[in-house]
Image (cartoon, rainbow, N blue to C red; front, side, top):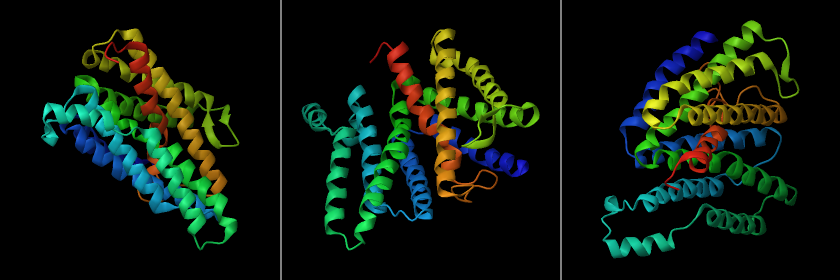
Length: 291
């Protein structure tokens, strides 16, 4: 199993790093949209495992709209509408009519209401379908969309997104090997019996150590970078445990078998779902003078 994890990571990590550092935010938005769709359908499968069918396609459409809105928000922040060929006057009008994520949530609610009222599904499925659909949008698609927002944050954006990815990868790897070799005290036995406090500490140490490399590119004082790594690591570990709770609820070991040694897309990005928005909010609230 370990060699499969390493081989899969060796293939995927360079591709992800290249997308983050070498492509524009529009490409990152497309990649985020694709990953979000894959993760959503794995989440829907977890629901179906316990007999709860979601409004898959409507939820997916709204998830894509949220990613698109997050991309547009990066254009508004920096006034970069050149890719759309908009003159200054039209750009100003465009910024005034730009929808916000909460407005997409309202559109989603209207759609769920229409589907519930017009559906031919058994009435007993009404509440579960609304619940699975809403939780998928809120717990997977929305927080993951901050990858686009983070990448589009000016010159530091790509490095901030890479920072969130690397501290999560390093923390996860250190927790995995540290927990296997020295783990004794269960961290959350009901959710993930193999996770230990020792592994959690190793994971935190791994995130803090790799964060030192980013001081140069983020142009931020070391204490801020270490604080951001710590916050991102805690959020990532919480996201990992949260997905474990979903899988235990559904009675499955992995969200799918798409990635050898890792399970599914949702298994691979579970920590990132919370780590990415945590890094975003830390940066804009604790350090960045631009927001």
